[in-house]
Image (cartoon, rainbow, N blue to C red; front, side, top):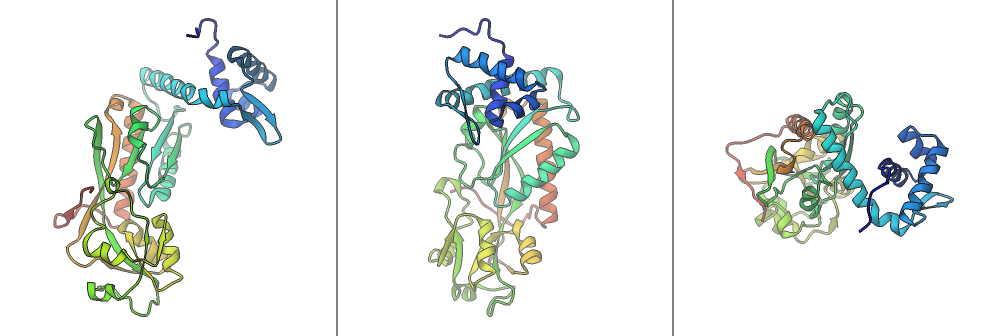
Length: 321
């Protein structure tokens, strides 16, 4: 096993900056080093690893296979060290330079991410947030266990008892049609809906979808003429066709105001879809993580209130299939 004796750990920071920026000059700017000092550090890294690590190309510094292989472990080790130092010092949002990874596979993920970015920037200008809005982020639990993902906002809670699932607001589903649709109107019943054609999203894997898309609603959508990847694509299709589509209620206000769509409730009792804040309990004592959780909870609940969402005591709760 290789020994770290004699290794300047600052070289790992240089490696991380080079990998992120793919540029000696930009890496130096990030670290407050001159270009010559950064180049010298790269030379020492190459000597230590016995590999070129980064090759000069017309588009920048390209990592070698060795660099690609060791980067995830170096990044994880540096993040763990940063978190430990931050925790020891206490967390001050005004001066912190921590980096957080947030997954928001909710259909409104991109808008929520921008809202969180702005709120974090106002309170903690040095903190960096990075967002992932993939719909089927099935690797999220493992990433949270490993410390590579800080938390997730999703409609599927984590099943492992080492995770904390905090319900932050309730979403539901509505039917949308373009303004001027020849037959669509508020209050459409199952008979009216059965006469229409739908656009729908690819259905999530059985263990990663809410039961709301079941029964009569799914029967209507099963033979959809068009299937798209994400809910954000549905309004685009609806606005140019006579198809109907199902949207989360969190998107209804935008669909009405921005796209001038007709929004009607799904017939029958309202169906509640809880939205969860999910994180690993190992972060419970992390002051910076507690700050992040509070920020996400506050901003998500505010966004839900603005969209007219909340908890309806008469609604039917929905769990994952």
